[in-house]
Each structure stands twice: as structure tokens, then as C-alpha cells.
Image 1: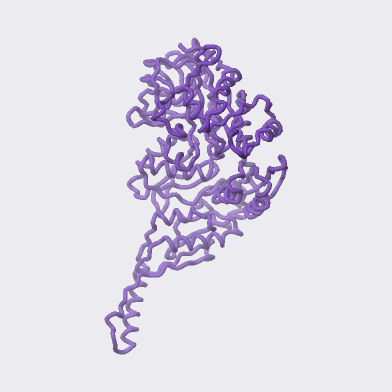
Image 2 (image 1 turned 30 degrees about the horizontal axis):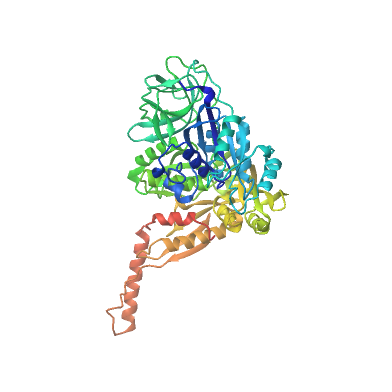
Length: 601
């Protein structure tokens, strides 16, 4: 049985691109957890999409051993967490299974927006925070200025900050000693009834659901019967083990330990992240608090390209939900696309990641509708309703008022980009509420702006304007009155419900024009002329035309009277008119994707 006093549980938190995954690589190397020939950079980023984008999407737990100067062999359980604002829920779950956190700060960029919000998450859980200054080997590193920022912006003692270079391994030994010295061992009683928190899961097609858990009390071992407290389902444990890059089987998991269990769970809906696992024969009295319910902010519908794949898509979403607890979905249907699911996401990057994971991991061919936020409507009879789907939007004469969600956006940027960023925020209907000079090089801009404006291309534009140096973080603040209209897109005079969007009234014409132009370029030509129209109610506000494929009926008329040519053209024109009345316009998948991409809008 592993002694609880020689166990340390901690996570690595930071702003995006401050070196969390590289630091995790060095800790794994120090522990010699993997052969040098099998080692690759960002080894914990197991998904192709993480490697391609250079970001961490999933929190990954690892157990390493470290022999300290006092001669004791310590077991260190740590979690590498994402840094992007869309994956904050992953961070909050990782934090709940730890006693301490390494707060990483980039010596070249200093304290950024996500550094602050992740630190507050750790403080909420009463974690011991160890500040770590990374990238000290870089030419642009300013260690003294970074220490001042840690003291001024974070309120932490910079004298205790550990200086490291995760890239070349400088200071890793000192960091490991500081972890053992400063992060407290976990509390727990191995003799008490079993009480363990599920903080993550993943699905294995051979072994069923693999449950990631932190044991707070008791012992879990092979052969015991466990009970999942929220569903009441009971299973026998087949295997227990630790995360050592691969799954490493062990005899048991004691109080304070972090690891996995396999119990032949094939019914995916029985397992819920945040649930408590206990012994079926001697259960604990009450469940652990779990996690706060996540609130999605971006909504979009997913449909299978082939309607026969609906059941497969349903199973794929169920399995993805296991591994991504922040995904919310319910059944939906569309006249144009058939049966699908209405999904809630934490942001547009989260939406893109879910789309790619469904395509790659489950082999699904899917179509996404344009993203939307949740609007608050007050009808004429005084009823308040929330709507995120344009299909549910009532007629204008039935609406008394509309409110849309607003965010408090915090942007930390180097001084030279302030003017361009202010222009971008004004363009996105932002109102400046504060501007703080953090030091002689950095400014924090605080804006109140509609969430809908941030959805599409705000983050991309911010990064390109600031050359990647500006950081962005936001909180939902509440609802404010707005003027929203339902923009219908019509093909051949028929509205396509899957392309409908709720847009701000003053930007409706611009949005309609862009969508019509994109569809004109994406929809293949048919035998008849197709009008592509943007409409608000019965009023057409934008139009593009896809010309018909024409056969040269005059080819055989190499001479003769002009009336003969006219007669043939009129005959063709009548045929085209009949074809247009009965013809259906085929919408390719690329047309739906083109509507989502609004960078040039």
C-alpha cells in the first residue's frame, strides 16, 4: 500500500502557449517513464488535432516517481491542462483532483488573461499555488519584470517563483524538490468507506468505458463491486491502475491516489463525469460535490450527410460526451437536412474541435449549421422565452422585446497594438469600460460587447492584428436589449431552414450579401437558373444568381431565317421554366461550411 504522505497531486495551469506541455515532457523525461527512442515532443497531446493546431484540448493525467534528497521515493500525480478559454471546464475538473498547482508564466510575455482566470479557479479550490517562470533561456525573457507582474497582478510572492526553461530542462530538479516541499500531501482515510470522484472518462471499443478517478477515502481494487451513485448502476472492477503514458495495471488505488478503473461498462449513459464511485456493499453516506453544471454559449445543429447514419451519429456523440463533459446536445430536425442534434458548445474553437473529432475518431460525415447564441425574448402576452435556434424564432409582430447575451472581454496587449484593437472592438459593437496600464509595455482593455460578435472571426482578427501577442478572456455578464432579425436564405424561391440565421438588424444586409455570394460560388450549376436570396420576412435584401447550364440549341442552325433561331430559343426557355418549377437544388456539404467561414465578411 502506497503511503499517503509520499503522494503529491498537482496540475500545470497557464495561459495558452506558455509551455505547459513542454514542461510535462521534461517531468516525464526526468522520471524515465518512457524510452528515449519512443519519446516525442508534447507526448501527452495524444490527438492528431492537438498536434496539428499546437494546442492542448484534453487534460491528461500522469503518475511519475521521484527520489528526493531526503531519500524517500515520492509518487507524483500531475495533470497537464489546456490553456484556451474554450476549455476552461477541462481545467476546473483537473484542479478538483489536486492539492496544488504549478502556475506557469512565460518570461517573454508575462502575466496574461488566462493566467489570471486559471489562478482564480485554483484559489476557489484552495490549492497551494507554486509560481513558475518559464522560457528563461529566450533572448526576449525579462525575468525581473515578470516577477513584478506576478506580485502586482497575481498577488503571489515572486521570491518563491521557480525559474525554469522547459525547452532545455533548466531548473527541473529544483522544481521537483519545490513540489515535494510546498504542495501538501492529500488527506484521506484508506480505512473509511470508498469515496472516489470521476474526473474524466474515455471509451475503448474492446474494454468499454475506462473511468479516470481520484480516490478521496477507502481503497479500490480488482474484484470489488462498485456503485455509481448518480445512476445507481453496479459493476465489478476488472482492472485498476495508474496513468504512466499507457495504462499501467496495479493492485489497488488507495485514498489520495489518482488512476483508472475498468469494470466492463458498456452502457455509456451509466457513467457521468463528476459522479461519485463507492463500494456497493458498504457505500459512503453522501456523494462528493462533483462539478458545477457547464453552461454552453454557442449553439449549432449537427446533421449526418446521409440520413441513414443518424443512429451512428447518436452513438458517436454519446461516446464523445464521455471524453468531453462540456458538450451538451438534444434531438433536432430540419426540413432540408432531416434528423440531427442541437448542440451547445463553450466557444467556436470547441465547436471546430468537436466537428473534427466526430469526423476523425468516429468516421462521421456531418453538416453543421451556422452557430448562434441564446436570445431572451419577451412575447406580447408577457411570456419570457429563450431561443437559440432560428427555426423557433416567432413572427416579428408577436415579439415585444429581444435581449442578447453580453460578455466582459478582457484583452491584455503590448502598447503598440492598442489602436488597432480598439478599432476592432468598436466594429464588433464593443463599449470600453476600462483601460489599465499594467506596466510601461502592456495595457489591459476591458470591453462590454455582445457574445454573438465574438463568435465568428474576432479571435482570429485579434491574433493577426497583435501578431499573436494579445490575450483574450471573457465572462458572460448578462443580457441587454438588442434588435435582432431572422435572416432567411432562399434557393429557387424556397427557404432553406438549415441556413437561417439570427443577426443584428444593422448588419443583416452585409451578412445576407456575404452568404449569397458564398452560396453562388459553392452550389454547382443546374439545368435551370437559380436565384439565391437573403430575406427578412417577405422583404428580399440580397440576391445572387447561379446561371443555368445551357445546351447550344442553335448549333444545327447554320443559316436560314432568324425566326427559326428565335423559335428554338423560346422552346428551350419554356423547358427551363418547367424544369425550374419541379427541379430541386442540390446543396453540397461545402456550401454549409462556406456560410460558417466569415473571415472576409
